[in-house]
Amino acid sequence: MKPLLSLIVLFVNISSSVAFQGDVIDGLSAHFKTGNSKEIAASFSPSVDLIIIDEEDVYSKAQAEQILRSFFSKYPPVKSAVIHRLNTNPNYRYGALSLATKNGTFRVSITMKKTGSAFFITELRIETEK
Image 1 (cartoon, one colour):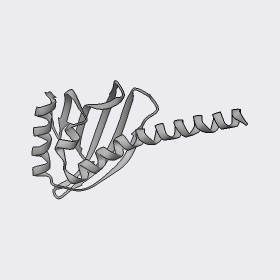
Image 2 (cartoon, rainbow, N blue to C red; image 1 turned 120 degrees about the vertical axis):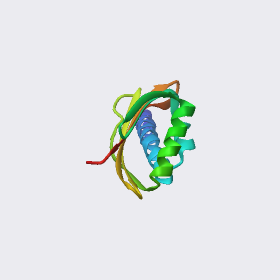
Image 3 (tube, one colour; image 1 turned 90 degrees about the vertical axis):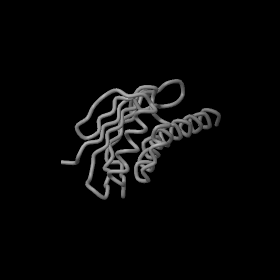
Image 4 (cartoon, one colour; image 1 turned 45 degrees about the vertical axis):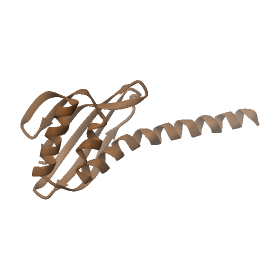
């Protein structure tokens, strides 16, 4: 009976861990839908490789938030959906979103790296959907 109980506890722990990992990308998708640059920036690493349409550079967390806020003012979001996610590596996460705005549809790619017990965005790419 004890081995069965141990197996069940192990399975529940693994399942909840996998569910939480999915929530990182799902949570970001919700913030993109509302255009909440402040909440998205809360997940930025201290420096972020930010690519928006055709402009690319490495920015501080604060600078990246301002640029993202400017993007949302030009392209007010209407809908966001997760179209792809990779969560097989315990130290990295990747998510691709489809972001519909009032002025066009974009593909958002999010690369995250684990620092301590949390994941932080190291690269954010927003490209026009082809």
